[in-house]
Figure 1 (tube, rainbow over the protein chains, first blue to last red):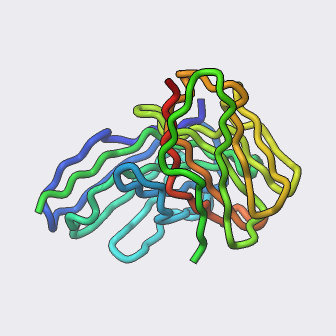
Figure 2 (cartoon, chains in turn orange, red):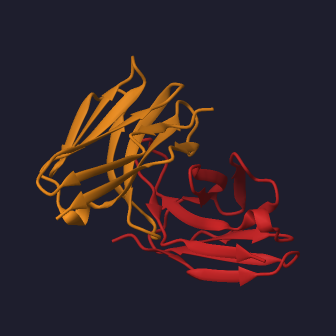
Length: 112
Length: 114
């Protein structure tokens, strides 16, 4: 299946440390998106990176995309307790508008 | 800000009941989606719609149908609810036709089928 796979499944760090999450996928994509989900709530969009982009930044977030390895990483710098959430990557298949595939997520716990 | 609302946060239904989940977006988005989310499986696409009265199957449409009579509203229907449809249901909307556009999610409906 095309489903993205996040790694690690769970991550526990101290406030102020950096958190890195990885996502791998199987087939060619239009774009890759990262979302955050606080416990029991809807998903909030963080960053979209297109297939022809290699890196994007948004505040404390940095996303990289390596289409040759079919992988992406999300880096959260100087983490805060409020960053505690699950993080999902989602891929939109090449030439398949609106067909999104989500991974099962990385659960991040930031300890104060 | 984009707002996507879902009719219920929690719902309890009996096996065999017909269930309607409603989703409304207020930003004139062309595209709307229904996903279900289960532990360890991430989000899976049930159906999406790119225009009024238009719909396309996602990966797991069996046991579900959808309706989009107005642009702002997208309904998910469980014709005869079963226990394996107990899940978190998430609605999303997306503007336009560009691949650079993201999805905006509602808060989710947690459905329990007894």
